[in-house]
Length: 198
Ligand SMILES: N[C@@H](CCC(=O)N[C@@H](CS)C(=O)NCC(=O)O)C(=O)O
Figure 1 (tube, rainbow, N blue to C red):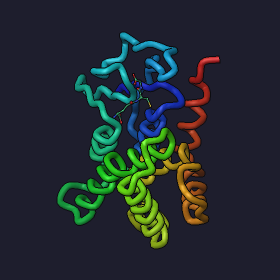
Figure 2: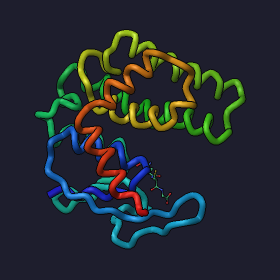
Figure 3: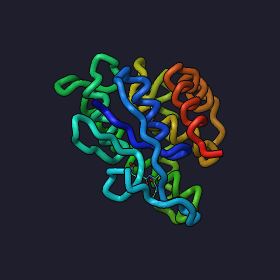
């Protein structure tokens, strides 16, 4: 049994997309979170240690952190081919991509969106992030090459949300459109929209 703790219009949307891609049966529990504007509150029903989303509970074990959850889902639903099995040549690059998204790309995006950029190192990191995404898509059609993976879900949901933090790029737009058309993404977006409180 897999229970997914979710709050609409947050980074748990990409977990929902990945779960839809995985074909795993899961139950979604909507929880409130403390919003940055001071509204909302931690939901006592949320098992996440900090009251955040996403979190999943699988067979009574709690897993938090988006990227750990992504790896866990890919391994659990190995047949869906969203990750790279241990022992395969793609395993290392797959893990490296996900860790890079978490530790390099996301900080660069947040620095662009909310300030904190502007120094030499921030500018260099920004240029490196753009270059790495564009180089991967120049080979394409997906970030890891021929195959659609969880890397596309995690990067695509984030870049789609923060598109204005990236320069104009036909390759990025075509990739976002390509992955956005996937039925699993459409289902996740529809579910997410339904859950938004009126
Ligand atoms: N590092 C965590 C961050 C999770 C996170 O900050 N989620 C936000 C929603 S986008 C949240 O729950 N915020 C509520 C809060 O900060 O209390 C992850 O990637 O899963």
